[in-house]
Amino acid sequence: MTDEPLHPRLLAAGPHVGTGAWRTATVVEVVHPSPRAVILRLRVPDRIDHLPGQHYAVRLTAEDGYVAQRSYSVASAPADPLLELWVERLVDGEVSGFLAEVVEPGDELVIRGPIGGWFVWDGMTPAVAVGGGSGAVPLLAMLRHAQAVGATDRLRLAVAARTLDDLPFPDEFAAAGAVVALSRTDYEGRPAGHLTAAEVAPLLRPDATGFVCGSTPFAEFATQLLVDGGLPAAALRVERFGPSG
Image 1 (tube, one colour):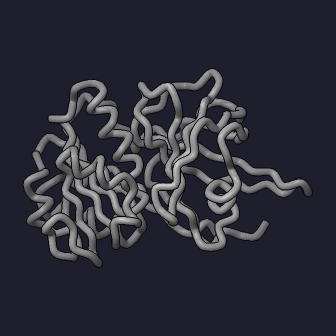
Image 2: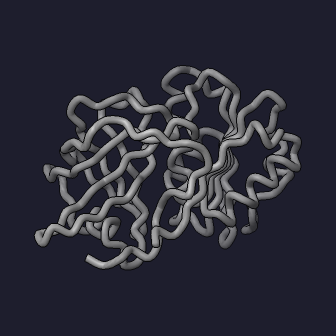
């Protein structure tokens, strides 16, 4: 195995709490929504219910004993009997490449989680969430949870990516009324371009918690949009992606 040049997560702000020991999950379903991603649905024995926004670590061990692990956001709602992970297939990614190209239903994966105690939403309080690229995945868990518990009025969403192939679950976000901004292609009548203050403004409310997830440049950009729109910085929770080194 070789070093993975990019890491899907995390340079997160705030504390993160590991939960549970490593355990073996069974792959139930593998879906390839685009050449750049794979969706894995796992059956996890004695699974601890997660909160939307949490993630899991996946650990691979090579025949020579080399170990590599990466963290992936949970896309499924807590009520889903299976755990769903969306994995971005990175160029030369040793873990994401294996998950995207090799793993099949019936395989077993070693995982640990749920992890994270800060970037979470329980569905009880108003929230506005903005995600860029794979940063939209934890927001989808929030959306699915809101739909499951009848709290869709408490969650407002905006997601962004370069193209539709770079955006996880675009149809679900669009169907839920989320702002969908593609910077390089037109989408449903919206001209190509970055997310704008005018698009974010209607999502804001003074009592909301703001969630921002994405690459460091996107997180900084989206955070500024929310602050400029009037959301207090203290009400923001931000997670950034960065190189794994």
